[in-house]
Picture 1 (tube, rainbow, N blue to C red):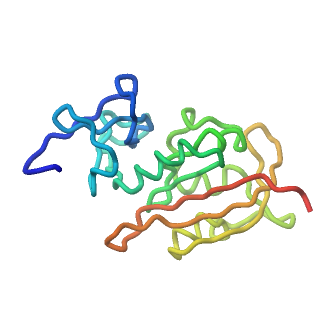
Picture 2: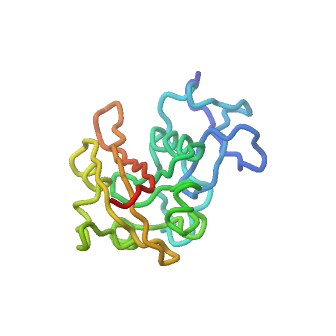
Length: 190
């Protein structure tokens, strides 16, 4: 249990065998308290600040809520493509299976504001370009409810991909929006 003014330290993944926390800089880190590892179950709420901001970020890096950090940790271990955004709609993370569908590596992007990711992959349905508000991830953010739809994208390699996308909001115990998650998979053409 954390008491008083406990000192929390981030240890880079290279020095950690059990990564339990992902930070905004995109790197996996282990949260340590006085040299002892803290499993996520032992940390009710915490905010973790990246040791250095990723390229393109301002010097003052916003901290992510623990719930969003844990969602990122889970996504890094799932076999289904996952795309995560913060409450402002900016990209937080997408996993390796998503990299294969999108044709881009997360390490190459790291920073993608709402205005960019909602249009970067040219989402379309029934031959027309989708407005960002029609995307399930945007609906999950704005309405704070799950959303689902099917549409096509053009990935970074120029290949058309037909996707089924389910998105849901991530809500803190205090009932405020933390971010949203989209899980998607390629669907067969009709």
